[in-house]
Image (tube, rainbow, N blue to C red):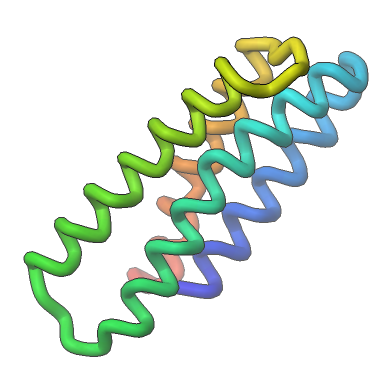
Length: 110
């Protein structure tokens, strides 16, 4: 799990650096999107590590909580932060970090 989180963190850093080419506001928006995606994934990985016994119910519960956290953090970012969030870097960063786990899963296959 740490490997997958590491890949997500590297992808987040790359997206933030690329967004930084378009200005500080774009980089901050991308960083917010990365945090919104990465924080629930880190908590989910910790949840899976603490609950050693594998169970479909625990997996589905953890996924549900992760999605609720993503929605709650997104609401917080868009409604409560005193900063203009640019949608394109925010959503690109969020999607890239969420989908980056696929690269980590390739390690398990090979």
